[in-house]
Length: 450
Image (cartoon, rainbow, N blue to C red; front, side, top):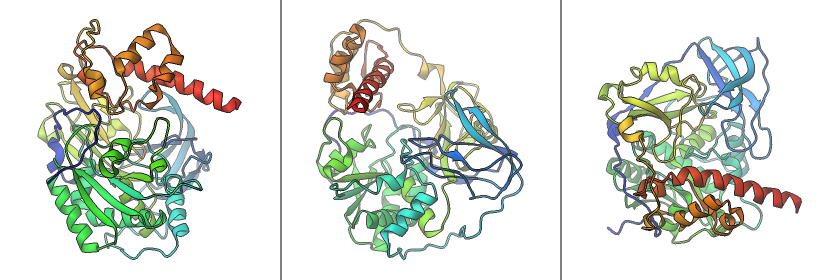
């Protein structure tokens, strides 16, 4: 079989997916949850509840704060204790709704059964509205509001819906487990999104290091027999799950600098998003749960898990449920080791897009002493966006923001391939990320003035 992949750059880190055999477990509820209003891309949601108010699981507690924003629902039933600032995993202050947990009474009309519903609503508008009202966002990392992404601007047409099951980050297996355990729901969710987009073809893309998931998804596609949906096996390579890399692999098209996937007729959604769409549309269930992997380097087997969690649960609660912080851990990451963020506050809470609690020892996190760039070009060979990180590094040292923009620093997807490949130990990703933010700020300021 000729397995597809993207054409430019990429690396091959050890996948370290020791939790692939860990079936999904339901995480118990804590005594208190803290629900962030800033857990999606775009404007934070606006709270609709006040201290002393009783809420039920699935009840709307916050409304979108702008066009790119999302509804937020209570993940538990109980009493609102406070609405105010609290630190997130990065240590930034965000508005949270604190709820004391008092049982688990769900809102009327939410179907919690596992009965599969395959009949699709007649109207695309009805599907979109349920996705919007149930607060579904992308679960592949960016948490972009799904109803916005599925409704392209006039003049833009989707030719292919790519459902991302690559899960190319090392260690993570939450997507893998839902493909193994709930493949039919994912396929129905894909069919719902396909219908919203006008019936374009749909490709479920999975890396070849997940044979059980590939078999489960192929069986589900065959069983349900929705027209125009297929499974494509990809060659294992990082960052295969990047939007632009998937489009290149599946469609053979490359998104131009500054462009969007829809510019080449593509819409990319994660398998977790497809499951959330199924639950929102077919079950009227808001996005208040997700799957999270607890794992790491040299972590004992009994401390590794895939949990079905509620949003707003403190990370410290999950850590204690999983057996505590391993003795070997010196850093905790939210997300994968390549693109995840270091956790500065274990009392921060889960959000819709939480995907892991990853423990890494000093032997992995310690960086080599930085030396001079030897102009080997390995960073450029590895960059999946075709950038030249060594050149960007020189421009950063010179403070040349115009040169950075000219050399498309804003196209960096922050995958970490350059840092992984650099023999000189230069923190390329850290410096490029900062410079990228500065250049994007200049571009936005220029556009506002226009």
